[in-house]
Amino acid sequence: MGVFSDLCDKGLVSDAYAYTFLISGFCKQCNMLEAFRLHEGIDPNIVTYNALIGGLLKSSKIERAKELFGGLSKKGLTLNEVTYATMIDGCCKSRNIDESFILLEEMTSKGVLPDDFVYNALVNGCRKIGNMEKA
Image 1 (cartoon, helix red, strand yellow):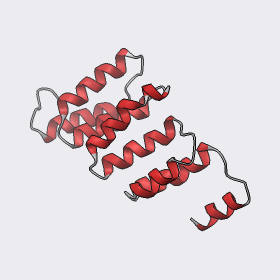
Image 2 (cartoon, one colour):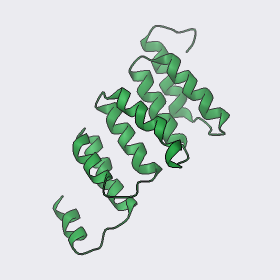
Image 3 (cartoon, rainbow, N blue to C red):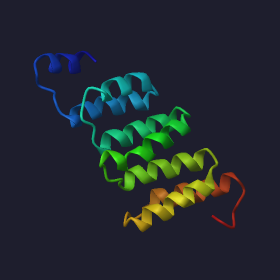
Image 4 (cartoon, rainbow, N blue to C red):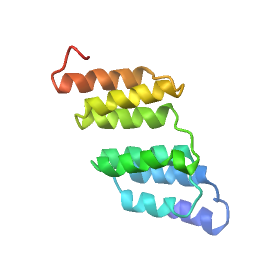
């Protein structure tokens, strides 16, 4: 974090977008402790939360990801296609296909259109549990 720390010390980094890049990097490394530490110092946006949810799912912290996802609307944030796609993929990878389809229904009912990534995650999830009819 040397360059980032230097920029912060000079007052050149102050918004959620700049912090989200670093948070995303820690999430990709499954370093959720550091990601959440940085998250506490900013006013996070939906992109920040998408990164945190993805990191939690990658770290096999599915219940924590569900809690975070469930609280986003209460924070006044609008869930987007990335938010839903990330959760659907995580549920599929954890073999929770029923919950994935519930999220798909919620997503479409709110006017958020699923993309190829979502459908591929659902097909792959169904394949993994041997439910080719649903796939």
